[in-house]
Amino acid sequence: MKKFEIASAKLNVVFRQGELPVVDPNDPNFVLSLCGERGITVKINPKAARKLATHQYGAVLQGRLVSQNNQLTLLDAGFQFIEPKNVEPKVEASPPAESRGPLGARMETTGESRQKSSTASGSRAEQTA
Image 1 (spheres, rainbow, N blue to C red):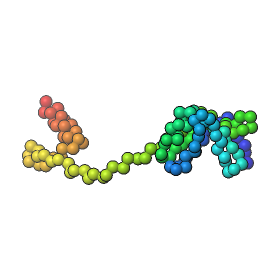
Image 2: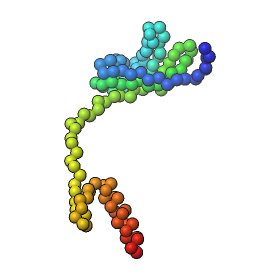
Image 3: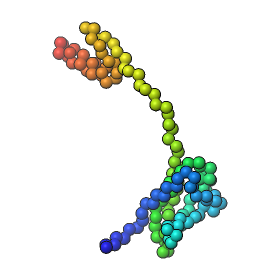
Image 4: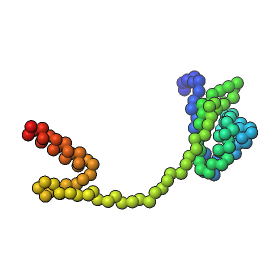
């Protein structure tokens, strides 16, 4: 197996609703345990820790994973807070309005058909001029 040296890697850790970590805003340092063996040291700002304490939904911890002094550390760490999607009742669209053309033919008055008809009439005007 080949080995490639990298300076850092982007890490995203998803915390689902009800599984958010509890972080003290007065000491916003914590460790993520990877399979109980390796720890990743994380420090977030106090404002993010306070928002995390009041947030009711999920969140994604993001940062740049580096090795410092033989320890994995998450730099530039912050949370992206997940908000629930607004579920609106499905409303059926009304059928497009109809109008009568110059010879009594039905014409739809949607934006697309109006644009086509105005382009077509403009072409006819140019042809007659």
